Length: 563
View 1 (cartoon, rainbow, N blue to C red):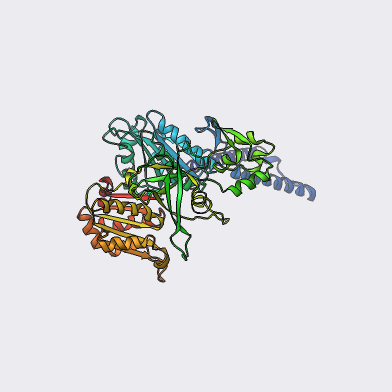
View 2 (view 1 turned 90 degrees about the horizontal axis):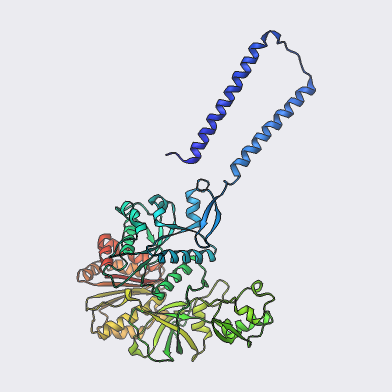
């Protein structure tokens, strides 16, 4: 089928030719009728000039009309804004090239049975719109493979019904599009899969969609997020990915975590003299009751603004932070509330008193960190790098934990289970790969393995300089000497002219990697999404083969916690 613009141009050309031909025929007939009366007479210079001016004016008018037609936007059609339930103007698809749409629009595609997946898809759209991104929402029943080929980024929000079956609205897409691998090499995607672990095939359709996307050459923006029966923690993890995708870190949580009260009891700099940002070991203890977690689990932290920033904000707006205000059925001083909320811009609160300001506030978004300890350690240990924004200011979560909160400060914290990254239950060999603060989760996993008496552990870790960035060095060297770590390979990227990273160490040990996997090893990866994760994935595919890596994923022997 020809493109719309090509068909239109051909029809226009044919119509013009017919019109000109008609004028030519009419002129010939008139010439024949008056042939006997024709004789030449010079009209004079003034009339020649007038005729030339009229002709030029006519040609100018035609040129202006053609230019206006070329640059004027197509008449917009109405399209339902699914987030707000109101019509909004969207450019006619024929007027937008596929490349332009791919460069600017994130497509959110949902497959829903009861409406919950659609609700979450709409909330996803609203979050990205709030970050200033161009977003489009579609049900999977209106999506084709060609639509996916034209897209650059797609976020899927899909549910599973029955025993691992797709929702009714996804049956046609599943039968027609997913019956075989397609060509989707230019697509980058994220996946939120909804399921119920009471059923044997948990998140069955979501996992089937994931395998199809991988087989079709699409690249994951981040690891799939699986939600067990509307688990709030998993949904907040999805929101964490949305914040990373949009580059806006203060997107409000859809639902505030139910934090517990913890106390910061230790903060220790682990990399003095490093060319990188400071990296801190933190310890926190519960203020109420005991806490339980497993190696691989995460914490959600409710950050706070430093007191001096809140005081400066109040002073600039002539507001009294001591005034009690109502917020979500509780009364508290405005300054205490502001410390845990997004600080409104000046034009948002001009002329408002303290109580009115409180009605506009939104909680600060949570921050996630891997737990680096076990309950037997008596505290939750975190490994947090101090991040700074472009203006030099400390990051929201890392700034609160590593700089602003004094030792002894109360910290809002919630433990979140991360079953996808729990240690194997048996003594099979384990390959632990990480860089930077990704060592936190690997440290907890090693502690769990040592506690269970499983010594077949291979650690691959990368950082900048051995002299400054060997995090938890004494502990790791003690485990190596005692035989609890059978093998360790390190990549210090700044200790030589050539930059060496963990994936290179893994490639150098290709034969041993193959032998460990043949012996039943599980591979766990924790660290950066942009550098480490794709690099390690490429080496695994190269050494083991794509089919075997996919098999390891399906059997839970290749797990990642990347960010």
